[in-house]
Length: 157
Image (cartoon, rainbow, N blue to C red; front, side, top):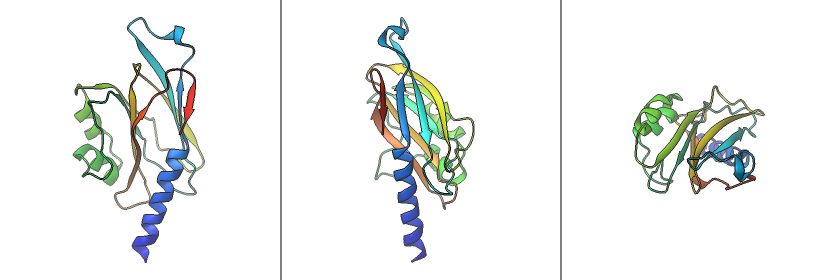
């Protein structure tokens, strides 16, 4: 029974994480850099009651890169986040990897009922993946896997 309640709490935390994700392209298309890069504000809003997230790692990438695969074993970097909230192994593994445009870590934990925003960059057609630890769980993490970034305007997921 305890395990079922923990799983249910983790599922609800994931739903709250996803419901609070906001992707915003900064300004009109004219503000894109000469090299074709666009910047986005990524806001994570923690809609849970009492479940803080470790500082999430935001990865902007193309379709050839994969930060994690839903239903598959987690990489050592994702495991480090799930077990200890430590983003360093994932950031190091992605640094210079093919298909990766940007890797950014939020400045601190995102507490229940709060939100935080980071700015990332990439090219048109980029995808975003986000990984953060569910602090009040035993090795749980939440995230978004390969979601399309908006070309302009904003998108809330």
